[in-house]
Amino acid sequence: MDQNKIRNFCIIAHIDHGKSTLADRLLQLTGTVSDRDMQEQLLDTMDLEREKGVTIKASAVRMTYDADDGDTYIMNLIDTPGHVDFGYEVSRALQACEGALLVVDAAQGVEAQTLANLYLAIDANLELVPVVNKIDLPAALPDEVAEEIESITGINAADVIPVSAKTGQNVEQILETVLRIVPPPTGDDEAPLQALIFDSHYDSYKGVVAYVRVVEGTLRDRERIAMFATHVDVEPLEIGVFAPQMKPVKQLQAGEVGYVATGLKSVRECRVGDTITSHTRPAAAPLPGYQAAKPMVFAGFFPTENEDYQDLKDALEKLQLNDAALVYEPETSNALNFGFRCGFLGLFHMEIIQERLEREYDLDILATAPSVRYEVLLNSGDIKVIQSPADLPSEDEYVEIAEPWMHVQIFSPEEYYGVIMELATKRRGEFVGQEYPASGRIVFKYDIPLAELIVDFYDKLKSGTRGYASMDYEFAGYRTSDLVKLDVLVNKQPVDALTMIVHRDMSYERGTKLVTELKKRIPRQLFEVPIQAAVGKRVISRANVKALRKDVLAKCYGGDITRKKKLLEKQKKGKKRMKMIGSVEVPQEAFMAVLRLHDD
Image (tube, rainbow, N blue to C red; front, side, top):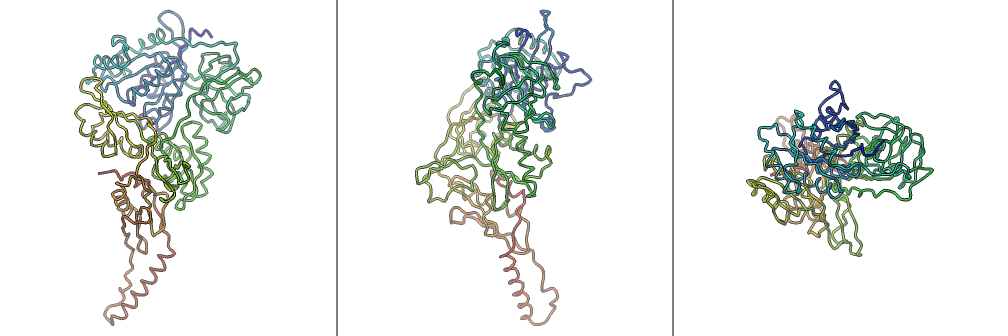
């Protein structure tokens, strides 16, 4: 295929600015999907994506477009997520493109994730096509938003395309502009094969299906291929393109985007970011991949039934194929037995993974409260990295603890200045600066510990600003803080899954709140259950769950008082014995009580 007739581009935007709707209109306009098969959010294939109205997974599709110049072009579109937790999906999609549509909501203007994705596109040297969407809304201000885009990107406001993805107004102009601005791919069809794996999913019949962008050479059906990183060679079962369903083809040439059904059954043999080459005529070097995702939030996933452990392991392995940002390792807990410590890019990412495990693999999971990764400087001079608060050594074994801090950018209308300042200060935020990108809008820059961000900072920000504020964050490095381990004891037994690492100044307040929450959620037993929060050997808070009592005196009407005392003494001994051998079941809500500690 003539490379001059190919364009590879993606759509980047803040969450809920209309990427998926715009992709729907482009599919309709090019005749890729018939009106009969059309449905809203066509490329969002997961139930979760449709329910939550967000794109979770990047998806590729090939469109054929008859342009105004009389030629027919192949347009490869990749629809990307907008939520900050799925920035890794966006960075991978950008590697497979030469251009990007920058979509901005005409009513909301430029928001935090718009900027974050814009910088990713600039770093990847992509040509930008700015688009102002939702111009059909009564509150739309397309001219003001176009000027805002000009002040940020330097692209003339007159070149910004005003569209309505809902009604289809001006959508054709986007495709014509993409043809004019986005360069065609470069690459030699006769060179040794180099194809970048930018995504993958698992198919029960075809094994690992790798989404590839062929950079050099030609990928042919039934020709043995090899992976650079894992040194696995295999004969593909099928190669093809997304139209938008999987459609087999005989070959993929340099510049084209498609898929390879490898038949491999293990995630370890075909990794996202790896380079595919020919087994018989391999390339000299792999393509520069992208950086591996760094998990920021960690939580324990445990099956409610011990016999489901292997099923959970298989499910996590298959899910990792669909989501390369997920990492996990085995973990043992005294309270919850065997499970996995999983790493996520953020709290929303964790929520999505948990729901997918429960829905797609029919598993019942207990999830512990999320935590972050800490660096502990031991007395010996070594640095120990801990992902679970339960792994923190005792205070006399280490010198200091360092926690991850984030650079946070918060976009907001000016009227919420005080709300945002108060929220950030409560969460140990350090003010760095502020900017005014447009009249009436302000950008706050803060450094905030990640542990303070992951629980409900975003929810509080949204509710405090009536949904108008948006935020983006990036890793700023580790800083030493005065941190302590807050242990929780139920019936004098430590529950490792409820252990937290908190700032010393906040330990009493957090401990008291946690004990109060647990008292509400732990069911009453036949004996009294003490719940304690302790820092080191010092108990800082305690509450008792009252015992369920049987009225042993009901049959004693009248008579001698010594008879009643004897019965009560007998009951007291029985309770004491029961307490020594009794075990307390801690319900799932108790583990998630940690999430509600910030609630005011």
